[in-house]
Amino acid sequence: MALGFLDILYFGSFREAFGRDCERVDPPSHVLTVADLIEWLAVQGEPYASVFGDRSRVRAAVEGVSAAPGDSVFGAREVALFPPGGVL
Image 1 (cartoon, rainbow, N blue to C red):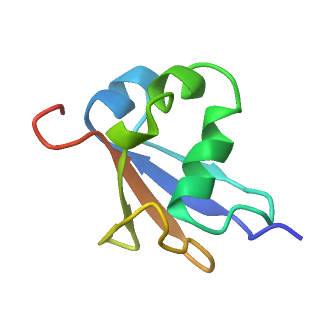
Image 2: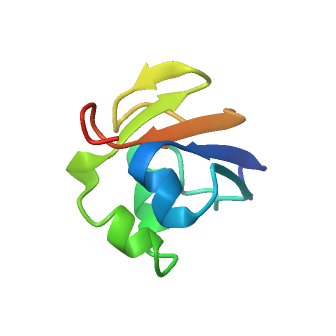
């Protein structure tokens, strides 16, 4: 069972790399945390693989609240992904 649609917002160099500021995805049921989401995106091919190749360089917010890699995305409708401060 999938989690349902999730809006991903991209900022800074991520937005530039993808050529868009957001997208709607339907991640599989095993995507439960921020880290799971980034890992799932990274295996979707280019440009995701390049942008998310170094997971330590990805910051996130779930529903507008800063989130750590282990934080849940279950039930969320919006996740923002951005590079570390100073690398926008």
